[in-house]
Length: 459
Image (tube, rainbow, N blue to C red; front, side, top):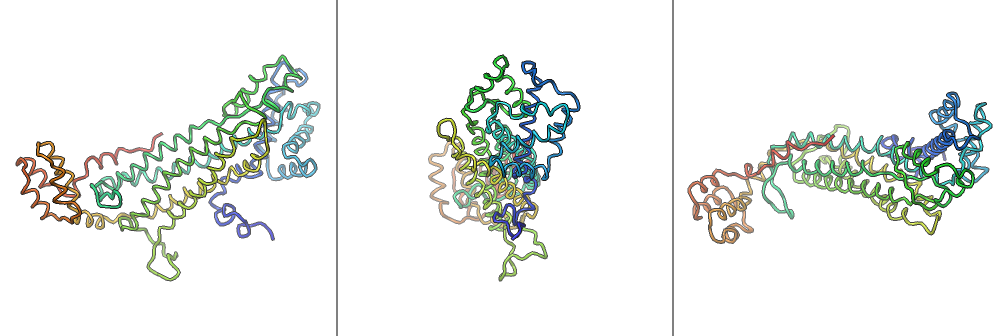
């Protein structure tokens, strides 16, 4: 059976393959090999710039151009050549080394220096760079732009609905009114903060040999500042230099990356559930697509499937990310191999996040507010003004105002007439009584409108 979107075991490459294709060049085996090649070439070029290593002379323009072409033109044919070497070596990084030696031999200025490929490196010097570069590219090129799309759509909706009054529902019960825009603005603010946290997570890397001490480096060339050269290469790739490691970079940075992404996901999941609830209340209607079916038996249904899909994928994403964050920082002594197979799943969590972001964005695009439904709930819930009345009574020095309003309103359904009756019997000044009498549930919204209109999604 040939592999296709129908025969793939994982829905990431099957049902959702079209949604995750932007991640394929980054987190696939092809992507990993490409980043390994990039790491090896950058190390080779750095060695050639070191005057302490005259055996590897500084590269001329044509040699550097050849090396850059190996990176820039890397494709499936190149990856298959590496896999052919791996079939013999049974070692994936050694296969990259042999591939590069073969490619360097094509250039007359490089063929005599092929033994400087992978010079003084352990496999993890190359792998940790490749994994950090994968995460960096996945974040900067795919996940952050997708996050921005959701935040931008949500910001626009918050501004549009800034003055749409509605009941709050603390503990699921009617509570002091707000506006739909303000409730959406809360999520904009939270998502922006978590996006910024995720964007700011540094990705550490190392290039320091078999146990992190530059043993082979110093044996070969004791006069060279190896930590300085390593830092130069790592920071040149946009990564953070880690001076203290064992054979492996300890993956604390990957754990921080996963945790930051998980926190963003939790906020988005919370949003999905709230919107699901507002749809259930009838506050939002979803625009129906004529060709779609909501239920196989109930023709009237328009289900909130996008928000449900997003919620489900966020759950899977966070389960994977949590395992990565828990497992990867733990390694026996100077190195064990239990991280190797786990690291091959770096793209799995990111793929489920991407699916979730796309689903949420699609769902937001289908929403239409039903102001009449919001107004109906407000008009039937005058008891929410009890908070305002007892607070005004406090200012006016009335004894036990909360207790008085509790006795009159707790657990009771109130309308305009019954609230006016309560106001008439309370010991209030004429000014206070008049101000409260003019108040209605739909106007008891505090600064909700201003807060909703002022929220922004940041730089």
